[in-house]
Length: 179
Ligand SMILES: *[C@@H]1O[C@H](CO)[C@@H](O)[C@H](O)[C@H]1NC(C)=O
Ligand SMILES: *[C@@H]1O[C@H](CO)[C@@H](O)[C@H](O)[C@H]1NC(C)=O
Ligand SMILES: *[C@@H]1O[C@H](CO)[C@@H](O)[C@H](O)[C@H]1NC(C)=O
Ligand SMILES: *[C@@H]1O[C@H](CO)[C@@H](O)[C@H](O)[C@H]1NC(C)=O
Image (cartoon, rainbow, N blue to C red; front, side):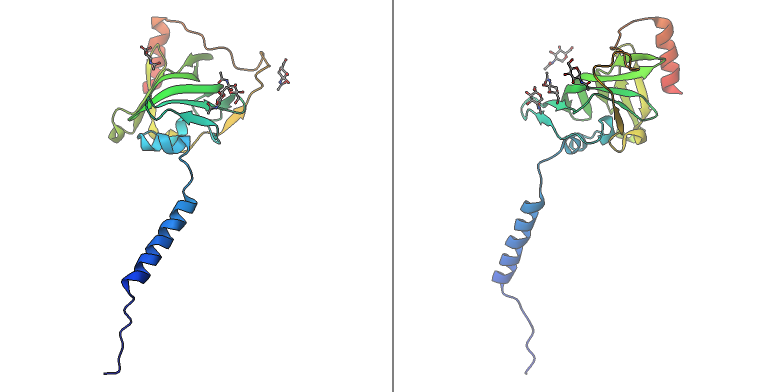
């Protein structure tokens, strides 16, 4: 006798539970574009850092990103991002992409589709129209640093994406992409 075991009543548990949920709701912010990418099994680093202005249609998954400045990525693989990037997000895929291009041999190729066919392979595919390029997923773990370029400066190192089809160059790109 004489020993009382502390046994909190269910009400206290309930109040505690409600309080935890309240805290959770306070800290939950709306998902970022990076959350949407992650949610769809894509790496965050396909897009530049600091995107805040974006919208996504919950029905079609069509998204629009407005950057504050067009920019060129400072990454190993050179990407250019326009003011406005649009595309359709689905599981491990961004389709109908516009506003993003990749530099190769001093030429800019518009990126049309980004896919992760098999996450276990550690590879990501960029369809640039003339060729499907594969890169290591590990290069895209975090959003890319991106240097703003003056949209008025036509002599910056960015030229409008230029479409061409030459089998010779395709082969060359394929080799570079694979190696
Ligand atoms: C982007 O800019 C367009 C045109 O000004 C605007 O309609 C849109 O609301 C902006 N933001 C997003 C997230 O699309
Ligand atoms: C593109 O983005 C810029 C800057 O965020 C915005 O002012 C412009 O209206 C957008 N254009 C379109 C077509 O959405
Ligand atoms: C996406 O692109 C395909 C092929 O270019 C086109 O047929 C389709 O209409 C596009 N979808 C949307 C929603 O823009
Ligand atoms: C670009 O040009 C427009 C119109 O010519 C001008 O209003 C704007 O300030 C310029 N932007 C920069 C960054 O120079």
